[in-house]
Length: 89
Image (cartoon, rainbow, N blue to C red; front, top):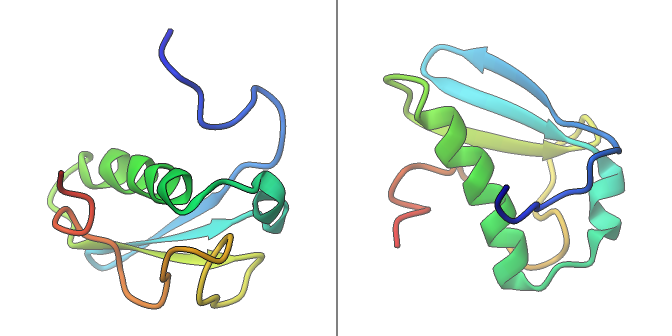
């Protein structure tokens, strides 16, 4: 089964593809998840790795509630695209 980052129910992100970049609109309700910085990074990197694993794409840009945002929960910078290097171990 694995560890769930989110519950079974709830808001889901909207994903767009433009050129070689994904744009992911995260639900503003996710701000209330109240994860630590590490938890926030795990969530964003899980999305990034999943999307980049679909093919030859360059990065994932995140926004929150349909608008550009500096962060989701106050810990991780969303102003630059996430890449495979961003989420490398």
